[in-house]
Length: 90
Image (cartoon, rainbow, N blue to C red; front, side, top):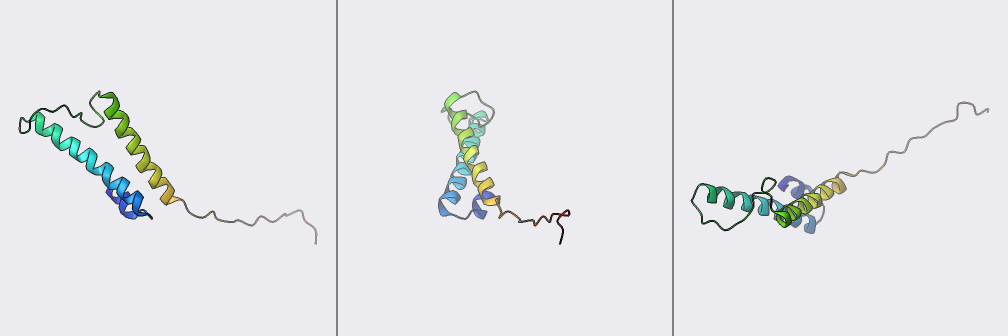
């Protein structure tokens, strides 16, 4: 996600990708810290694994935005191919 954000053309898309990466990383660190009893249990779900409904919806929507940014940045100008009619008489 950070690489996609770095390659993006606009500042806003860079911020969206960086924010999604930070959100997923933060949730992961907090959840692993809770499981290892290093952090207090606060109820944050582990992205892509826990069964939290609205949390999973938010993560999937964010990943969809990042994939849309990636696809938009990879679009290239269409190659124009000239097709000649072989049956055309001079």
